[in-house]
Image (cartoon, rainbow, N blue to C red; front, side):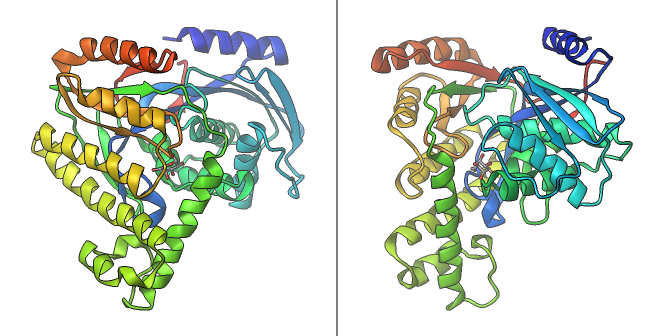
Length: 387
Ligand code: GLA
């Protein structure tokens, strides 16, 4: 069954390009716990949202890539053979970067017309950028007659974002958009890129609360955090043999050698090493159905992101504070890169409706802003749509 968004997208494609498209879809993500651990070779626990970016696509006889975004209301055109392409600094970089890096990886792409649309809020920390990359990548590969290897596609999309867009993101968002399993979260080992399912007890609901704050500086701060992590590894390498990432460092080792680095760098490392441990503990707690323990670990994650990693903001802290005062909340924390976007809340199912109402009212009273609140269902990974 086609959704309304799919019908509208097909109509827009026909109107722009006067032929029939094929449709692909890639979801945004939530992350239960494991924040800023992916680029430290650590563990994360994401799930796909049932909100996505869709790509309608049809081949062209030439080597042009013509892209229309219904979200940005803009058309951009590229030549696939222009391998010296420079980023434009806008949304189209995500698509062009993926096309460029797919070709660099050896895929021979055909020229295409592509129309993109979605129901995923942009800039809300729900990984719309990864969903753009993955939907376009899936569509480009399939139309060009190539097999889609999902982990390979995730890696190429990440490479495009790192090297073409210029954000040194980890693999979490692209991986979950490609490989998510409907109905569960995944515990992903970002070093081996293997994952296993984590089932969320149906007694609990996952609720995302959007502060509506969108910070422009987030990607600069993100890259700075990554550099601090690299500094910590360099400093610790002078004392501990055989480490290549913060993943390899235990908490006692970090405490013992904390004097090898500046205080700020130490706090960044303390967040990462602690968060990797919390993520593994949370996976065990979800397996055991111990929702209280899961919530406790989520609360600790927030404190660490706020105080040691310094990627929270007043509005995120306020939302977490409000959540702690409401009945039926196991845990609450900021989610994603930080500096705005959403909190994720683990809420007892029977309290969810009251939670949503009270959160909206209290946040609006405190800030004058009406937050968007979503109760989530873990959806499937990317693939053909509209069939
Ligand atoms: C962003 C990045 C991810 C990850 C998170 C923080 O979403 O794209 O790779 O690092 O921030 O956990």
